[in-house]
Amino acid sequence: HADRFGGQLVLVTGAGSGIGRATAVAFAEAGARVVAVDRDAESAARTAELSLLTGAPEAWAEPADVSDEKAMEELARKVAAEYGVVDVLVNNAGIGLGGAFLDTTPEDWKRILDVNLWGVIHGCRLFGRQMAERGQGGHIVNIASAAAFLPSKSLPAYSTSKAAVLMLSECLRAELAGQGIGVSAICPGFVNTNITSTARFAGVDADEEKRLQKKSARLYGLRNYPPEKVADAILRAVVRDEAVVPVTPEARGGRLLSRF
Ligand code: NAD
Image 1: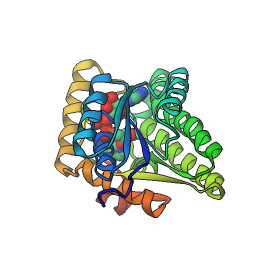
Image 2: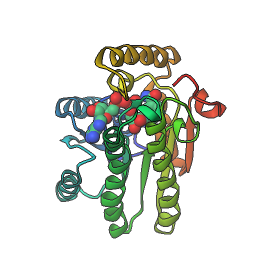
Image 3: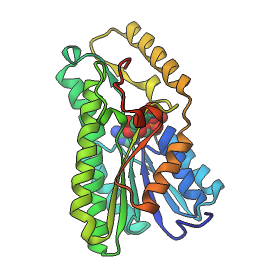
């Protein structure tokens, strides 16, 4: 539908790559005004450009690190002042971390929870409040993962961060339902993006980390599930107000993510 989201303001975090970029472009195609947020300024700018080319009446790039409380407060203030209250927030920014629990350091845990959990908390807190105060509803989409409910022996920190995002989404959905604000948790299995080639691995040296990044990129690549199909599921979740949405065969099959 060319303007299903016409006139709506949509903010996507981690919009510079993969699922985030595909989502920004899909909302643009549906007529939304788009705010592309990424800690990488150049890739955020490229996504804003692609959004304009795809049909967004307006699109802006806003570089910000979602784990940075002050930066997120500044972002929320600026977006409200210059572009308006966000109708749809997509908390998508996230990082990968592989490695056994006994190899994972407190610093590893802190890094992944800062981005994957606190990033979502800041987004929900700041933009959710603006939606509630405006009193005209809205929708929050949090990108969790199949890892949130499928345990694996080598993604303990990542899986824990995503399980927390899933539960936060469900609690917030209950809290905000009376105000016409929907909350959806999207749970993809393996999707073909850059996340594997940038993932850190706990307890290994730099050479071993490169090898594991290649190995996981190969595995993810083999699944070949395109981020555009996840973006479709995200738009559908907003339109239908779906609570928890498993995407990809692994997520729906409910099997242990045993290899990773
Ligand atoms: P990606 O690496 O291609 O894209 C992630 C983007 O987020 C990058 O542009 C990166 O710069 C940005 N980012 C990272 N940390 C940030 C921060 N602190 N602040 C702002 N931006 C930041 O990865 P992707 O696969 O598109 O991942 C998007 C989301 O989907 C993540 O939350 C990821 O955990 C989730 N996910 C991915 C898969 C998969 O198989 N690819 C599966 C399930 C869930």
